[in-house]
Image (cartoon, rainbow, N blue to C red; front, side, top):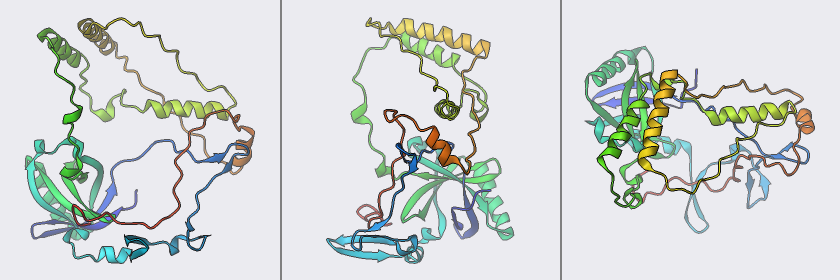
Length: 320
């Protein structure tokens, strides 16, 4: 069971529902560390005070904002929690709007809201049932991590879910990226619709065999091969471009045939997921023996920068 990322309440008119916010997603990406390739020693980042030129502990580090050159104002976590802002301690529902008015590009990370105790169960279920029967989206405001945010409340199975939303002024206009006008025939449109129909699947996304992370599976193959002293699998050689002009209609018709054949045969290409090897106490020695040659390109995770004066978002557009 994940730990709550925030504890507060949902404010719904005069109704207050204590809740705990739990993460709704998991990150299954493979994480790399940085290593010195000569001896595979771990490379770590250090938090150094630039004035004292010494490494400082986490207890000595706090938030600050530089309001002028050399003038820094320290702001504590307690001061942030005590700000006179209703959304600092509650997810405040401010409006209900049609679902189609929410641009999907605004939707960010998702969370599950858990009723905060027995007394919160009845108002929680009441709000959930109201959301289920209403055809509109509940838009809310909440303040986490030093800024006020916009959110969307909806029901997933028997739980109320919260999706963070971008503010409207954070969405860039795509107008300048739109392609120039071209002539499309009615037959080409009809063939494209046939392709969409032939690629349509009825199963939910979470049950689809094709909804798999092939990159992570391929990366696991590389790691397993190198751990076993084998040569990592190589990519298939790409066919050289023919240089001829593609006939759009012919490509659509061929795509329709291939999609129908794949659907009829049930051949949905998907990757096989392998269990990653467990870390061992002697991992450092093993790593030394299996160290790659210096010329081998190794993916590196971006190192964390040394701690500087942390600053909350400026208030040019909205209060934090």
